[in-house]
Image 1 (tube, one colour):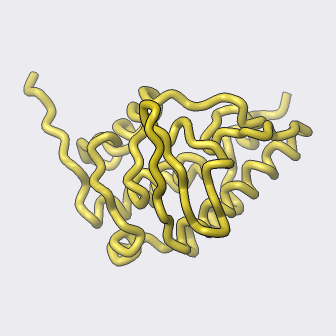
Image 2: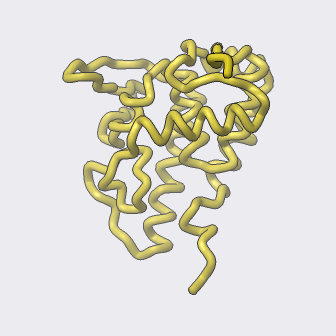
Length: 175
């Protein structure tokens, strides 16, 4: 078997990947931030809502004890606000109180647990393979929101999906 040779997606592929990921609000937001903020999977997995300053548009990322600040564009702040509202709505549906230091991409509705980087990277690779491409999350270049929008990402549609998207919690069959 030949060794796979993954490469970063083109702009058009990146736009397709973002829109495919946006079918799941949390996953779509994760992929959007990975592309627009240039943060790595490990940094995004440990991101907490306290690390997002909606007023200044600054995101604090942590990597191996170091801390960095990333200035986010207005579109990304809008998407993060919609995603935060989505998370709060999911917790309310379940009658669960959100943890004060909730992780942004927590797999649990209360936000207490952080996702692991390995499953997130595997999910990204599977999604891209389903689209016919071999690319990996940790090899993403830093795309700007402007590049993604130019390539065809409709931020309004993405935001609509975030606000109305069904999460895994809602998709579970009623017992």
